[in-house]
Amino acid sequence: MPVKDLGNRGGLRLRSRFRFRTDALPQPPPRRGRGKGEGPIGNRLSLPAWFVLACALVLAGCVCSKPSAEPQAAVRSAASEKWTRTELYFGLSEPGAQVSAEEWRAFLDSFVTPRFPEGLTVCDVHGQWRDGKGVVQKEPAKLLILIHEGSAAQERAIEELRAEYKKRFQQESVLRVDVPVRAAF
Image 1 (spheres, one colour):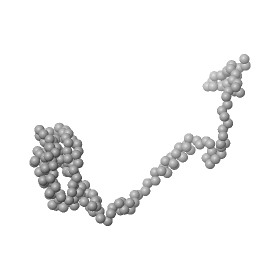
Image 2 (cartoon, one colour):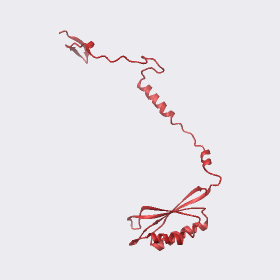
Image 3 (tube, helix red, strand yellow):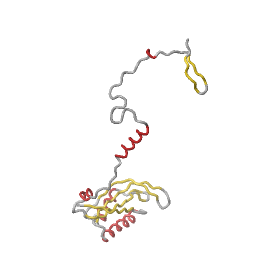
Image 4 (cartoon, one colour):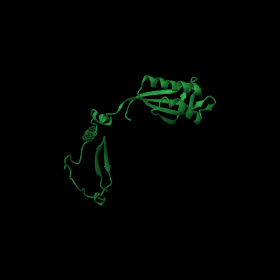
């Protein structure tokens, strides 16, 4: 069998005693379409060229512009005014018991509604808080949402609600959250 010289590899002379017939191997089907170098960028791009192309495409989608004030102005109607949204969180657990639905309704009807006859919203919520002793308390609660003008009389009425609820149902606190809003009725 003839010996084929494979050349010098790292100081070693490699030789093979095997012959390979390439005509017996299956050949891939001929390529269709563009040939080598045809088309706007050719069939082959080097790795740096692909990287630059990919970065350019990604950055083309990252066009930042200053948001226009016009859409916000369109949303606001001429009748919208500045108001205050006040959220009051009333815990329903009292020492040794729960505030019943009847007790809550009586408080709402006799104390809250007369102070805010324009309207209000009440939601059932569940929350947790850390009491004065450092213990996390979990309890059902009522969320009272008021949208008001923020007058001194309304501020006083809100503080009366908080004080009365704490006294009547032996609560440590009633959480109050105020946020300026725009509203139209």
